[in-house]
Length: 186
Ligand code: SF4
Ligand code: SF4
Image 1 (spheres, rainbow, N blue to C red):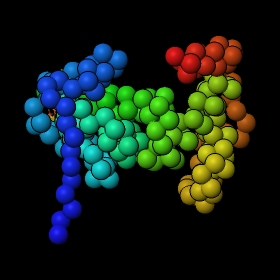
Image 2 (image 1 turned 90 degrees about the vertical axis):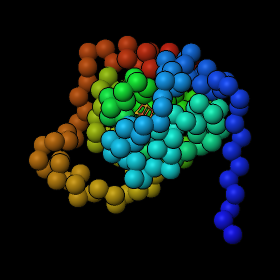
Image 3 (image 1 turned 120 degrees about the horizontal axis):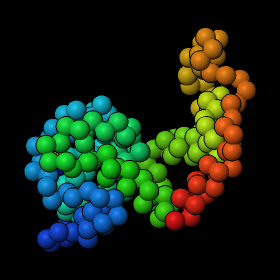
């Protein structure tokens, strides 16, 4: 027998939709579910919630379910969905909002590797004012234990001079670090 899925929805314009509109500037009521966003999304085939479904979940107030979705951490932020939307709705911003809310509220990331990559990029930017790919990759691998992944690609890039061994640094990286710290505390 097929398992029943129970969807709890709020009546009218949901409080989640209000939150997404007020704090992240996305007005989901304009979406009429044409699916153009999903048709252009490069990761929709791997996603558990497509961009158009994410908008619908916000309309219905399915906050908890969306925060836990794999798609929140699979979205690359390429903005194809937002560009294709005839009504100016941005599923990209919704997924970004869910990542931010998830981090603030300690919701475990459905794809922890992506969260670790975000943290390591920020760490590099705080230290040097820019990303040092080799350092970032080493810390990422240390934390995820994915030591062998992309090893040969990385070596090829190093030999081709695409990845430098020593980090480059901007003039005052501490200014950038301050900005990141301020943003995190808000
Ligand atoms: S393209 Fe825009 S209107 Fe169409 S489903 Fe996606 S968000 Fe909704
Ligand atoms: S921004 Fe995210 S949801 Fe939108 S098309 Fe790109 S990967 Fe898909």
